[in-house]
Amino acid sequence: MFPFLKFLFCNFDFSIVSFMHLFEILLDSIKLSLDKEDSDNLAVTHANSHFHDDHQFNNQMATDLRLPPKFNNEEETCESSTFRCGGIDEKVSFLIGSQVRSNFYHVNDGFMSLLRKSLELEPHNNSLTYLSSGYIDHFQSIVSEDVGWGCGWRNIQMLASYLLSKRQDARDFLFGGCGFVPDISSLQRWLEIAWEKGFDTIGSHHFNKTVYGSRKWIGTTEFAALFRSFGFRARIVDFGPKNLESLFLSVPTTSSGAHVKRKPLKFYGPMDRYLIARKHEHDVPQPGQCSDTFGGESTSDPKNMCGTKSEGHQILMDWVWNYFSERTSTVSGHGRVIISDRSPLYFQHDGHSRTIVGIQVKNQQNRIRQYNLLILDPGHRTVALERSLKENIGWKKLLKRGVHTLKKSKYQLCYIDPGIASGEEMEQLKTIDSTFITL
Image: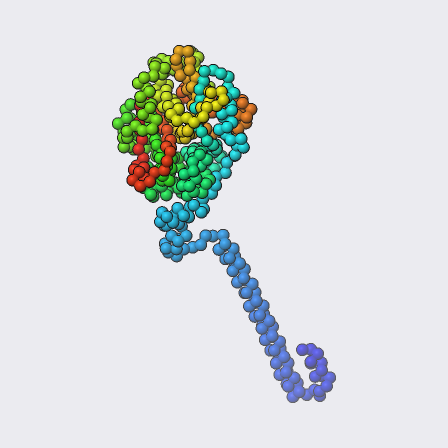
């Protein structure tokens, strides 16, 4: 603007009229300058507003990526949750494709092979051992996952690993034919599907028909319901005091603590042989005569003679012995380890469960049988078990359990018979029954 004024003063005659004309020109110049400044400010403001909008948009996009989608109605929620709203077939199909293989420590030489070698290396002491045939993986409870509540699931995994290695029908039908042992979360889904199919309806009410994502304890009835839902003939045997016989109770799980009356059954499987044998055997412990020790293995030390409770628990030991000795396949080179065709046993008492893979007996001069159960405990570290067996040091304390270790008043065993059920038998398997034996 100022160069323009200088130009006017230098080239035009100055007069009042000229001055007035000049003043008008000056005002117009100032107005144009102000209008341009306002326009520039408006443009900057408009541009800044776009940057602000972009910032808000980016923040919203980041939030949308972090948060799950919002549903406007229940129908959309159902479409996103197969297990909440889908049919059984849809749930099964979804689970077959989404289930996850469980992680575990793999024993390269095979756990049962190592155990068999250690048993054969024991000094000759009039002992005889029946060992479950086939392959089995040990699944330990993990501190960050299931310590304190997952033993039941871990024992299911152990039995599943045995079935998958031993039986073709298990590879075809178990867990949708996936051929591997699923993790606990997947097993929880399978149990919920079993309940929805009608297996153990009574028991499902104690869990409100929901276990997925929870830390709820399970027991033999849940074990049986899960395997029966695939057609496997899972059987339960209850051991307890005489006053419970009329109720045919299952040992209560920690989750519910409830007593449910079960339908009485005729004796089946190894029970037939067991009942007959009990009438004719003369080498079972008499009152005041039984085995006990402060370690895991039984001994005949007179200082450790046990009382009435262990006498009753000897019945459980007798039953396990007859179970594994009923069907045998091969005998070891030493003749003291016999391989049984029987499946491992799910072994439950109030508060914990383990897996029985065999039983050893030592015949004493006084005709007393000293039994030791061979047990896999989910609470033990697989690496420690493997090392103890390979080094042949300390494995007896980890794996052997004598009658003196049976401190509870009630126990349950669950085993799986050969074959796959179908038709009417599948309907019968939906009711979880048990055989009761007085301790």
